[in-house]
Length: 64
Image (cartoon, rainbow, N blue to C red; front, side, top):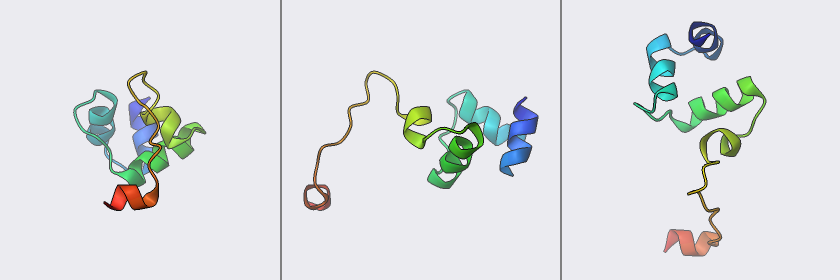
């Protein structure tokens, strides 16, 4: 349940409910906790829709 997962992650029920219902986007550290809890990668959980295209830019291009 949401209560069990939020407790295991050390976050509030309301925060987790907001994430599940696309009301709020979790911080990166929370995304990592959620992914680890479910045995998935952050990409698998948060970036798997068909609109997501992996970034092919080099670090230099990103900094520019």
